[in-house]
Length: 533
Ligand SMILES: *[C@@H]1O[C@H](CO)[C@@H](O)[C@H](O)[C@H]1NC(C)=O
Ligand SMILES: *[C@@H]1O[C@H](CO)[C@@H](O)[C@H](O)[C@H]1NC(C)=O
Ligand SMILES: *[C@@H]1O[C@H](CO)[C@@H](O)[C@H](O)[C@H]1NC(C)=O
Ligand SMILES: *[C@@H]1O[C@H](CO)[C@@H](O)[C@H](O)[C@H]1NC(C)=O
Ligand SMILES: *[C@@H]1O[C@H](CO)[C@@H](O)[C@H](O)[C@H]1NC(C)=O
Image 1 (spheres, rainbow, N blue to C red):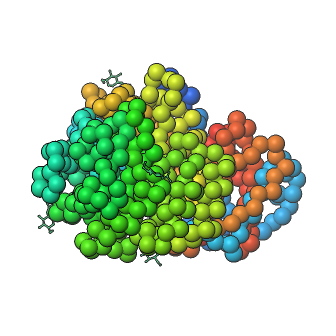
Image 2: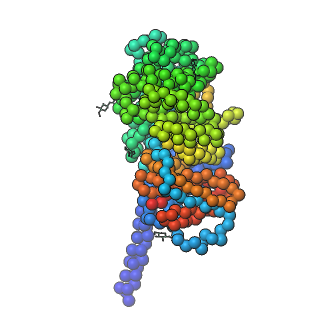
Image 3: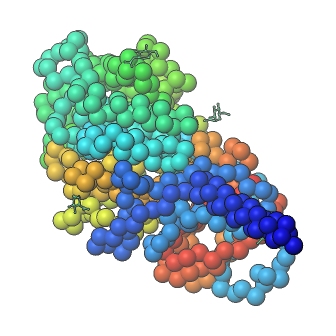
């Protein structure tokens, strides 16, 4: 009697211990949750400080037949994970009338992913530097780490941009025709290179960095000014076009001396701005024929002479708003000598519509060997006095919608603008403040992850380089629409991103001919990424 009782006591104890251990193990492996803070917007930010910061652990392989679901919603979720099982039972779905059915079709494949990321501007580094060292690496980890959203792309302004605290280039010495005074600046050493290296160290993936120049040195320009428009003096093939090609190569070489090599470059950031004499910040003008001739006569040969052949460095043309992208690309690519140096076409998100997306399809059909890459995006809050809206769901929705549309029209990736800004959306030497996915509060030693941070993560975490877009068909008898895109990852798993911008929940049925089907109800105003093997 006595022994039995003792046995049962110790049995309960063992169960208690086991339960404790299960819980403990679970806690150890679970994502750290978002610490919400509400400001004056319709959703919230997640606060990161020395005590806490939400994580997004490495994706785990699930058994065949199990769909891993991650959801972010206006009213609560941030990368909330759950599972759904495929079924072959038709009955459970048949009486559901108002729903959207998505049929995945792996037989039709489209473009491959290059990556997702953001820009290491001076402003980004200036802001990160205000945080404690622990939080600096936490911020980089959030973007690039295996328990972050695993960015693989980084854009780097070649010299200053408007998101700098002063106007400058790498050679601000009049008529330095040999570029003997070319040198990287304090901003490179303090605000760019340390964080570029930190990202490389923290990332489990290979990172693809690419440079973009804003203005050339002012003395190379017709207006002798970093801003207010201006072209390079003379003609392509002439002294100043040659010097600017040399200037870009020097940037590549100087960064290599710092052990940072570029995967690519864009020839010039928003070259159309260089034709506007009222333009307020760093710019340099190229139209399609000038850029064509510059690549053919100056930049291409200079790159090749220095070992930057096409297989070593991806040269992207355009890097401007979509509406002129097609004609610009046609002008450059119809010249065989210029075309041989071109790997891709870069574009920005600021003035795009449906017709432009059709141009992307046409460009892909005309020039299948060059890729399309989104290289800059941010919410400017035009006509709003306030440039940072902490906790705005609009930010998330606009990013997600734009990324899905671009991907469905042959974009191979998407680069956000500043990785981090301050509470006012700067610094910016001409006062052009904007919003960003991470906002830093220097006085509190905190940073805030905006809903747009999660929008980026719903793609970047799931679509590693070489993921291939596949076809899907939507059959809907629901009054509302959703946005969707589907990819096959290099590891053989399938990824579907769904965006419900409506204030209604929407039942969704997904059919994969190889696996069966499953059903989920999408929350109102939410984004979901589904992954299955
Ligand atoms: C889903 O599938 C997994 C693995 O096959 C299984 O362990 C789990 O019980 C299933 N869940 C449901 C709700 O059927
Ligand atoms: C670059 O890397 C080499 C080899 O690891 C090292 O010796 C050198 O100090 C590094 N240079 C810089 C500027 O980091
Ligand atoms: C580009 O600008 C140059 C210089 O202003 C001009 O000569 C040329 O005609 C322009 N090309 C196009 C395609 O507009
Ligand atoms: C930034 O931090 C300071 C100091 O903790 C605090 O007073 C202020 O309200 C914070 N600003 C925002 C927008 O959270
Ligand atoms: C993507 O695929 C290409 C061609 O198969 C290969 O050379 C490259 O290394 C792959 N990239 C990554 C990041 O796996």
